[in-house]
Length: 476
Figure 1 (tube, rainbow, N blue to C red):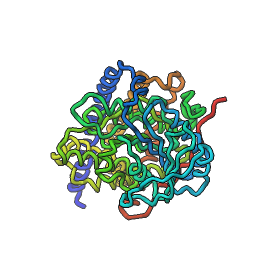
Figure 2 (cartoon, one colour):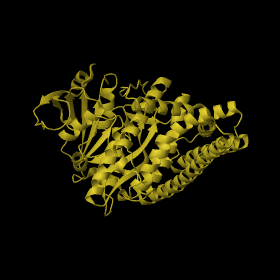
Figure 3 (cartoon, rainbow, N blue to C red):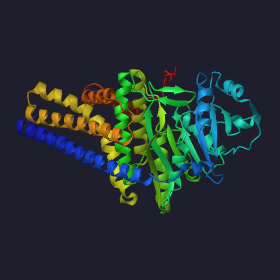
Figure 4 (cartoon, rainbow, N blue to C red):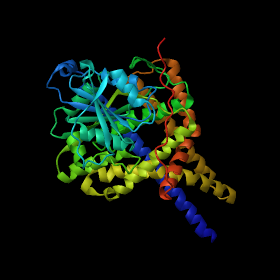
């Protein structure tokens, strides 16, 4: 290659990386600002009003909590007990046994004195066949419904629950998640707030429960995870939920609701066909479909986001399980973005098409690939002796310092807002994690994203993978 042409190429690559970095800085700074404004607005809006009156009212809107279960025999009885203890008057807990191969169903039947009932099932609804529906003989467990069906995966189980529910709203959660007692009160308040827009979905922040003390299905003590992988994920979740999703909620452009804590207007969810069983990113895909549906109807609508710490879940502490999880997330992102590619810079969809979708495309999907191949490019430039060391160190240090400061802001804002980790030692540990995360943890996430995209692009079959949980600490 001609030396002058090679220099032009190098200069072009430098400009691309510089522009990409500057736009990234601008986007994340804007996120910090918007999330702060939205958090303050949310706290002011919810600083008054007695939600206990809503809890006790027989006119409170009805909610079905759908919890898919597959081989959860070790913890299913306690998990259901936790869900049944929620402070709300008009709700149903629907556990969908998705063809478990262990004793999950038998344990539920014995613990809650269930019997099989007759209930009409729509034969045209897309889910695997339902083998039986069970209700308790005891009045104290009247809110519990158990559906036994053939195995079809989480999305299929949630679709079965949506079809069998008769309530106005459905909550789709992981059966092993811990919801705080007031969770449904916050959800209903979000659906029924005074607004000209119809609330079609409500999402919330997911908190890391590793090492926390759980007793009788209740969160008794919040503790910082002892495992370093879990600590890094706690920091990552704090940035993502407290700053990232809060910011997108501020401009009504949220494109994903976590599968561990998502509530939907059942009518709209059924209109769009429920969850897509052909993707591993079903939680993101259903929000895309519901937003597109309402946009095509030209009806005012919104997706609400609750920053209160209402849902706690256990994150992977094993490296292989973590990589498999992030691999799946990457495949889900690519599937959803490709399926809805006509939204890309499409003014028809407003901020969703002009800002949210491009952000997900460039910084959630493309950025890990650029980082991965950029590392090999740098190695090649060093080998060729053409690397601009001044530019390289300048942009590297700038990105590192910015990422650490952004993490610091997320930690401190979380302490100011909710003060879940109020020990000085815990805050210092999280700050130390912020210093070493870009070096130790972030490369793992990038590798997993590249692997997931490779599998998807070359059609390598891969499913959900498994999440082996250690269980929560018990009070003594």
